[in-house]
Image 1: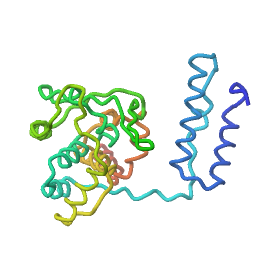
Image 2: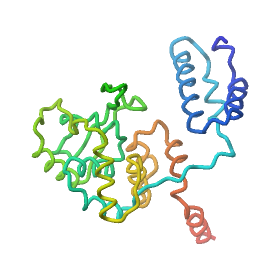
Image 3: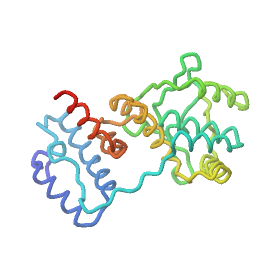
Image 4: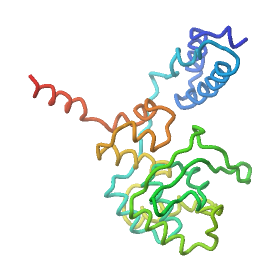
Length: 255
């Protein structure tokens, strides 16, 4: 079909077809994001009036149960990190926990992206391996972000840098090594007795920590590099179990 002939109604019909195939919400969302990017390109450069994907909204199967999100509390993280012996794995795990960046973004970091004086890290690329070859691409959303790191994280990075052979500006902070982060997590969990989580769980752990500390959701979204605040809310809404009661307490106090 010509793009100009595809309206929101047709997009919804296509979504329903995906749902009937039993596809996961995550996969359907990825498909729609690809389709939406094509429409956005047509709107920007070829005069298409509107993106019908925006009008249709995201596809979602009501029958799919939300996967249980595994993450560490600050107390659990502290126990695990104290048991990780390898300085490289220890620093990588800590940086993922205190920054919330994705694993690919961490592996794409070069030393020039770290500013020890200002206490910041610039995230603008992502690393992955395809058929055994390294591929560096823009971040998932294609955006560049600069975030601040706590002082103790900067100090750990400086200590780690002193152990590295190549610290030239363009050198990778964490030279690729298969599953070194996973091995560090496994070691720390075995020794501490804390539950095992996946590497991406460190990103969830960071979001949970910020939410518990009352950080504004807009700032959390920017720090995580989400394209929209709605994505952050959709992913971490269950971290706000007491919000409704807190609202009622405040409203009752105004009566």
